[in-house]
Length: 63
Image 1 (cartoon, rainbow, N blue to C red):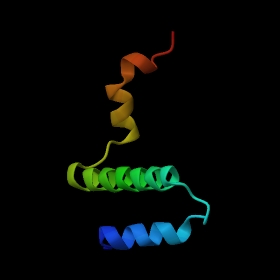
Image 2 (image 1 turned 90 degrees about the vertical axis):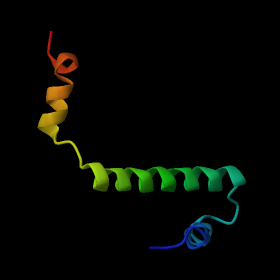
Image 3 (image 1 turned 180 degrees about the horizontal axis):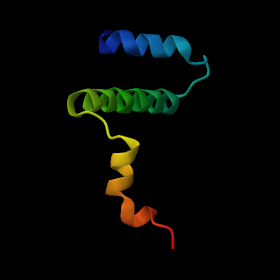
Image 4 (image 1 turned 45 degrees about the vertical axis):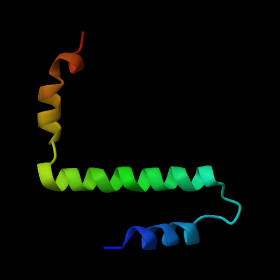
C-alpha cells in the first residue's frame, strides 16, 4: 500500500501539465471516496442485488 505522499506524487505524474489545483483536488477527492468505499465494503460486506431489491421494494414496484 502506498503512503499518502506516494499516492499524490503518482497522481501528479498522471495528470496533464496544465491541470489546475481544482483538478488535483477533485482527483484526490475521488480517490479518497473510492478508498473509503472499498474499506467499508471489506469491513461491513456488500449488498446483493436481491437484498437491494428487497430493501427498496416499495419504490421498485410497478404501478
